[in-house]
View 1 (tube, rainbow, N blue to C red):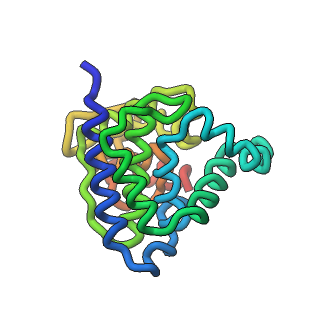
View 2: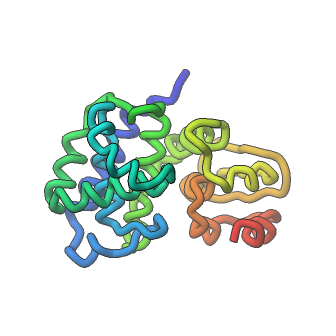
View 3: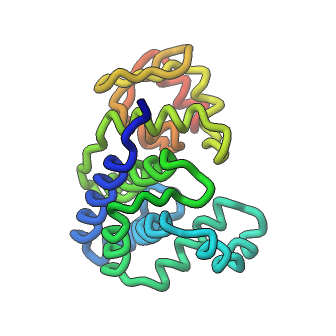
Length: 214
């Protein structure tokens, strides 16, 4: 049976909206865990999950300006949204998406789930906020990240395939090689390229992974 992604997505939308609604202006402008993104830009990115093909076409000039660099294009669209909508408006847009069953254009709901899980932590962790991640949802997202070919997986995937990733709070394991183990939330962040997660993991493979991933 497929993972019930929509309830998990809605739970994360609710959690991140509640978190954002509690932030001070300084926290909104703080750096996120996502390199070169502020908390506000990450929040703005999450509001773009509901874009239709028409919405995407309307942002063609932004994508053209990125000159074929998809990551830059995604960042620039978030920056543009952040300039268009105030803090309360961004929270309202995320709340309005609760209950929607529209996946992001060109991807499966697993990518939408992963976006919500990981970007919520991109916001919470640097601000010192503890927002637990459901292990079962994180496991479903991590499996998708480690097995997908499109959208393009994170570069760290090739390295991680040489290790055995083991969760200690749910029945999840992936790969073969020296063991790296810990909470499922940290493993999901790791497979999505967040190296800060290494500080929450352990095992005989950790030091070699830390050396090659740096």
